[in-house]
Amino acid sequence: MPTTLEYRELQPSKSWTDDLPVCKLSGIGYCTNQIYRENGQRIEEHPFEDCSFHCKYDNDTFLYVIFDGNDGKDMATFALQRIAAEILLGQLVNKTNDEEIKDIIRQAFLAVEDSYLESIDDKIAERTQVQLEIPEHNTTFEAYQQYPHLVNKLTQLNSDLSCGASAVLALIHVNKLYIANVGDCRALLCKTDSNNVLRVVQLTVDHNLDNEDEILRLSQLGVKIEKGKCSKLGNVGVTRCLGNYLVKGGYKEFEEMADAIVEPIISEPEICGGIPINESCRFLMLMSKGLYKSLEEATGTEQVNKDLAQMAVEQFRIQSTLTSVAQAVIDKVSRIHHDVAMSHGDITSREDITLIIRNFNFPLPNSISAPGTGVRFNLNKTAFVENPNQSDFELTLSESIKTDNSESTTTSSTASEPGYSAQQDGLIKPYVDFSEYYKNIELAKKNGTLPEGLDFD
Image (spheres, rainbow, N blue to C red):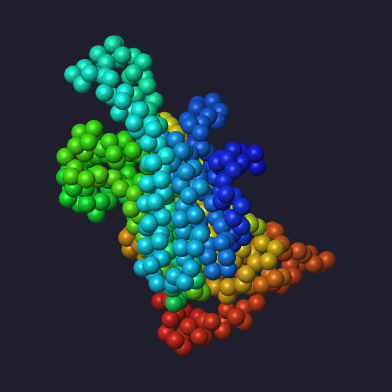
C-alpha cells in the first residue's frame, strides 16, 4: 500500500485545483504500475500517469475527475488543471436544464484539448521541420544510417506528441448526476430498486475497438475495422481520447487511418444525465482502466463491475473512511493480480490504478458518524440479473444492525467482530433490534413486493 509520501509523488505539482475544497463525501485510492519480477521485488515500468481530484465547489455543486494518462502524463496533468475552470467558474450559474449542463461539459472537454494542442504548437512545427529534412524516398534504416541525429530527434518528438489521456468525469449539480467519458475509464452507480435490492449500473461507454457503435462510426469515416481482429488504432487502443496529436493531426501517417475523411479519433465525450440523486442512490465508483482490467485479467470474470461493486460493499462494512474503502478495493485487486502473475508466467505487468468512491447514503458502520439508511443487505446470498448491458447485480434482504450512532448494516453477527463488547458474565450485549425488520416484512407482504421464494409464515 503506498505511503503518504508516495501519494504526494503520484499527484502533479501545485495546481490551483489544490485549493478547491475536497469533497468529504468521497474517497480516493491509488496504486502505481508494476512489472512483476520472479524475486518479488517491486519495479515500475514508468512514472505514475493518472491524475484526479474530488472537490466540493458549493453546496449544490461537486466535481470528480480521473484522467488516465497514456505515453506520459502531460495531457492528464494539463487537463486536470483546466477542466474545473471550464465548468466551475460561472458556467453553471442559473443552469438547471439537462441539455445546457451537458453542453457545458461537452464544451469543456473540447476546450481542454484545443488548449493543450495549442500549447504544443512548437513541437508540432519542429516535427514538421525535421520530417522535411529527411528525404522521403529513404527507408527507415537508410534514414537512420544517414541522418541519425534527425531520426533520434523525430523519435523523441513523436513520443512527446503521442501523449494522451482517457477520462471520466462526474458532476453533481442541483441534486442531479452527470457522467462524461472519453476512452476506457468507467463510472459505476450502485443504487437500490423498489424492493431494496442493490444494483450496479455502468454509466460510461468503453471507447475501444470492441465497441460496435465506435466501429460503425469509424467505418462511416472510411476506417475499416473488424471487431476482435484489431487491438490498436495507430498507437492507441481507444477510439476517443484527449491529446495524442499523432493519431489526430497526424492520423494520415498511419496506414489503417490514411483513408479517413476526417480525424477518426476524437475528444468529444459521451454524456449521460441528469440522473436524480434520491434515496435509491447508494454510492458511485469512478475508475481508471487499470482497476477493472487487472481483475478481468487475473480472474477471467465476465461480471467485473459486479465483482468490484461487491468488493466495495464489503469494504464499506469494515473500513472507517471512504479513502480506506477505495484503497482497500485497489489493494485487494492488486494482490489478486500479483498472486496470479506469480503463478502464471503469461501475466507480466499491471497498469496504474485510480479509484474514486462518492458515497450518497450507503452505511459506513465504523465511521465516527455513520449515516443511517434503513436499507438491509445480505452479502451471503446474491442473486444476479441477466442484463450484461447494464451490469446489474442484486443483494437480498437481511437484518438491520443498530450501532451507537445510527442504524447500519452487516453481513453476519459474530462475537469476534470489532465494536461489540462482552458483559462481565461473558455474554454479548444484545445489539440486534428485529422490530424494524418484521415491520418491513409485513409492509412488503401488504404491498406485494416481497421477493419470490421467501416464506416468513
